[in-house]
Length: 451
Ligand code: AMP
Image (cartoon, rainbow, N blue to C red; front, side):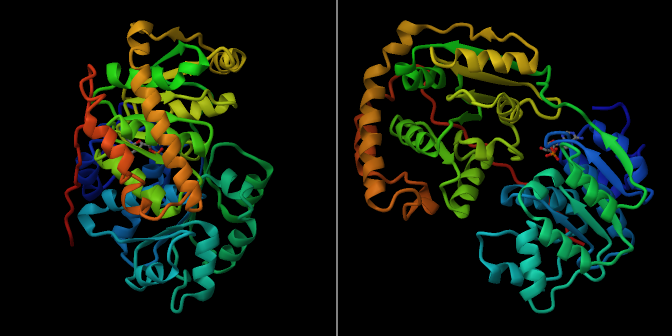
């Protein structure tokens, strides 16, 4: 964070009011360094990652310009994943809350028709994955970007590594040459440089380098335990130390994330899971429940570790140690964001020592053992956990029988309706354990004004 205020950087009162409602006290580094240029109309290259405040860095100048000359289809943002697109739309809407700003999200895996309806309402900003954006440009009657004023590439390195090059080139042929362009990328690959040359005009370059460094406000610990008791120790950590904390638990595989979700639910924890095997609707549902505070624990594979902006996460638990050290930084980067504090606990077993040492090497820090771990107390939970594991195994088998992953009804409850599980919960075997927490609701709604 910097000492300047948004007003001092030239942000207009309407947006400052929204920023105040969003509780941003000061501009982040990338915002402070880019806004003086972008508000004056310069193109920008931002070398920055999610967590730096880059979304507001590009949304603020767009909205400020939109206020001067309102028009539909003013800006187009391309981003690599569906979740990121939704988050970007949410930030645009929050920052444009006092002027009734409208967005449309165009992403694959969701219905084209409802997206076409959103486009027919003349949104100011369209945000999407390049594939679906190109699809709508080709097939949705009346939709064009011929009057576009801003084009934004978010996570350009990922866009290009995901083979979106063809669609991006096509979109570039269908928009005006005179416009502003912002390009954000974590790294400057040769493909990104090529895109930069093809689409930007005398850009200001802002670099916010926090690669492979964890922030000082993050408290990082590990616990060293035998592999066979991993689930028991996880439950122990959750009961003893995480009451009231919004927690993300990372696993390596989709199966493990599903199994943990079933085990934790049967022990009455409010857990949802998000992994690459779930449908898009299921993933968004799970994320929304976690974001709103309806569920306090999110179990995720690395699908969720990059790019997702989940506000107010207090704790990250690495249930499975990340196999690639860089993933550790992405995972723990879900907490202690934007100057806030956070905690990360990594479960290390006898098989993980070498991987763990590589992580310590990458981040240039020796982690401390988690204080206050009582193995005797942890193992007292073993019986309950074994029973929950048994029920989870039955449920997993039933799901496989129904075709596996995306079980009908998951969209609504993410598999929470299982009878055996409920019986187990009724017995209340676990509910008496110390520190048991049912989760607290902390849903919040943003104040919105309309023009
Ligand atoms: P981003 O890098 O755009 O994904 O933003 C990461 C998180 O930082 C999001 O939750 C933003 O709402 C938040 N954020 C962005 N700018 C600021 C700021 N100036 N002060 C506090 N939080 C911010």
